[in-house]
View (tube, rainbow, N blue to C red):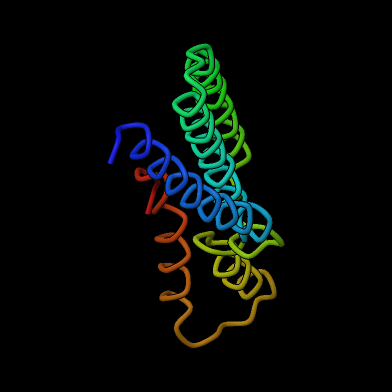
Length: 145
């Protein structure tokens, strides 16, 4: 078996694996379900395209493709950092409000506040107020209890 034949078989095998990875990653980018999932899928697509470019460079012997792959890697990294900063600034990573109500103390505070404004005393109102203030103090740390 000659070295050229080994490179030929290895490149065909690598392209087959990269095609499967590309299809699975495109599926993840389309389906989601959240924005961070899509950003990671796009970053993975950049890596897969770099793999395709590397295999083509090996098959053709044209070394300029390696420089193109390096440039694509740098641009892909900067795009991923930009998307991550966008997601961090946005705050809500879930779509359709799926994570909008999780971890926020608003329902407990509004129910305790509405009971005290109407003048009605309900059983265990001290517990409700304690839970509401405990939940509100949780994310920030040092608020009055």
